[in-house]
Length: 255
Image (cartoon, rainbow, N blue to C red):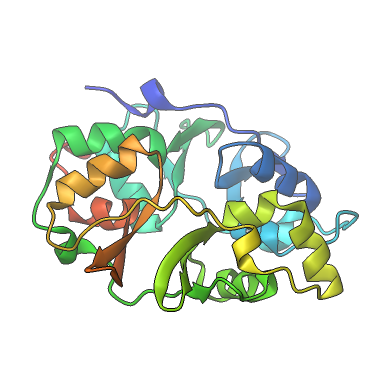
């Protein structure tokens, strides 16, 4: 049985005194949605995520990560992947820190890495409609990026379907904003860059009546975290890895 030790990766760490601009650079350049913060002895003290990084729009900011710190989900190196999933599910994060008995950070386990394993060896019952989120926060293709930035800050959601004349036109994520250099300028100067200029237009979707397991497999195949759910061309919900995770019957035993 594979454990956290088998799948953990090295995630760049931060000190409490590091600037948020450094955290932003790590989150922009790499695959991580969360970065763990440790003290001088490498003991875990918390984490910050992509939404925190988006709060800093000034590239010369001297704000430190300490003010954005949140409690970090943690697992032991010998915990099963099912136990890791339980911890991530409870914390509603996209990763868990792997720490030794002394509290030292050894690495991290990404939900995106263990998700394909979990859905192949654990059962997910029902249809997409059984697990999807029905109340979907959306935006319009012509809305300014400042508006979606505000939605992310308020809701904590990672991505939003973009509509044009009430039809799905694209999807915009936190990373789309973080990677678009013009967005920082728009936020600082109140420019009106429309969302359609930074959104992703090729959207993978699901149908409410299809098996949830099939939708989960599509999330893996396309390496995406969430999918809008369409019924007859109308947006009726959204399903993401966490929706699937909540529906999984995790068979692995806790330590």
